[in-house]
Image 1 (spheres, helix red, strand yellow):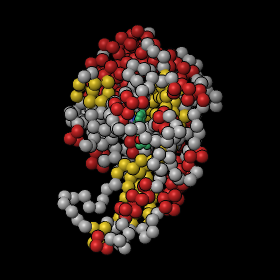
Image 2: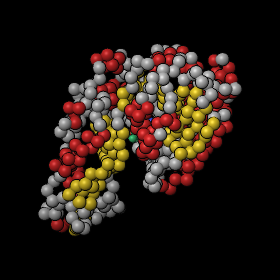
Image 3: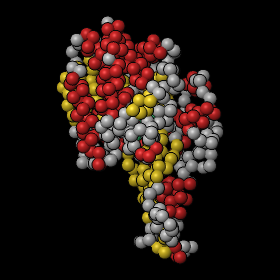
Image 4: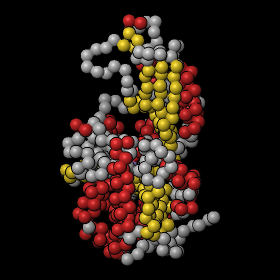
Length: 467
Ligand code: BES
Ligand code: MN
Ligand code: MN
């Protein structure tokens, strides 16, 4: 049975790739209200695809709220394998904005093949990876006329803007998502050709800090006596971490759960060259951060703080001598295991108030948040996935974490007690969220094979339905 589904997937490689290109042509940028209709079109396109491959009960679920970044969920299922387990596939069809546009070698929404890669916004994050799930299920259907296990799909359009809609759905309708395990393909391989399971994600609080220094903008001849919102904002931002990168917000570091000794040991045996990582992935002059921790601990197991943008003030051509009355910054913290978004935000806001310079007022708003997650590895689904990938890639599967976040993973664990299997096939140089995002075409096809083989193994496991 394995061979036929696999044969189907191999024979259909060119068609699968063309199907992905069609999806990538839809600019489903979730944060941009101008793309609202495109985001919906992407959802409808996926729904049609799920119907076409033989899934049932296919529908869009409108997310609650009127926010311009509320976008529908796509749901589908096939539940006719009574004694077999049920898998929940999670992915997201929304993408990050493509700017800066002039740095793309080919347009972001015109998928283009170069050097064995497919270039487009969303190629790897996450349309290309989510599409692998659909094509794996299509191959199983085509080979058997039915499926060896029960499947549900839940694909969201708000992941890149915090995933509020799916969080509310998972919290209120857990029965609609009953499953034995979940597959997420939205992470990367540790190195090319090295099969990787991701077993930890950081959480996040995404915030906006607004400083007001006066009723109205002032002539900068008042400088020296008048407070300046931008200067004050800079002071605040500079006090959140010290120069070594250590977070200075009281109480934050005390709550962090350090990785266990054997996980740290496994990280030390990963094939890793710091200098090569600095040069080829970060493209920077020096790796920064708290030197008491290894680079992996800094990326995967410690909190951090980063500023994303500071709009406003005078940025036009020439010069304008003004003291802007208002300055804002978008800034976020990544949360390490055991930190909670609510507690971190409360401490963050209190600290910012406390360090606010004389003469200005500051307001801190939470835009979205996600809890960190650690995946228990001692279960048959993780073992089946690791073996399936080892079989496909011919190398022992490694277990890593990622510094990024996938908000729903924590919720699936908390509300549904669902073991998540994060089998991702991106690469470190895929330019996620940046110009020239790509997905290795080889990884796309072997990813489909990995998922196929995992599903076939998983279908032979008996579900453990403890109430
Ligand atoms: N796929 C990424 C998460 C990721 C990043 C995995 C890097 C592996 C390596 C996901 O789409 C993402 O970008 N998540 C956001 C979530 C946030 C908006 C809450 C992130 O991490 O910034
Ligand atoms: Mn993603
Ligand atoms: Mn992303």
